[in-house]
Image (cartoon, rainbow, N blue to C red; front, side, top):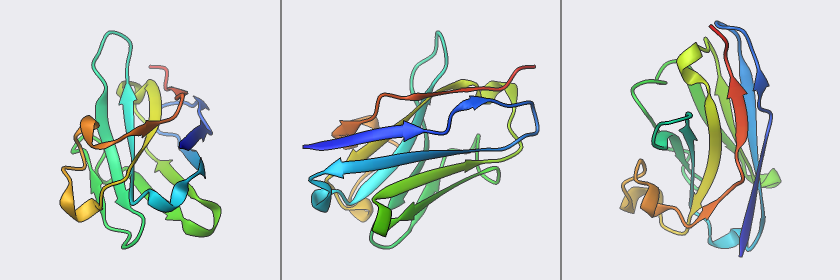
Length: 127
């Protein structure tokens, strides 16, 4: 089993920055891809970013490209999401997810590619 714990959420003003962390524990050796998704009230969960733990290759949703950066620290079993130039529309619960599949073999933005999910962390950007 794999456990994922997100942290770093909070309230920031528009234009500000925030860094989310996702710490993985348990049987992490079988995890090859990790990603971030978000869900705003009344909306469906949507893809934000993904990363290959082995190669560092990344993918981003068009809505966050150029503003958000996903990265990983293998030694700490942790993935980060650096969020800059935050907008009110970024307000959502952000979820970390992990997949047993290789990044190159999956459709990274697809929720069903990820077996493990964190509890979520709230990010609020008031207008």
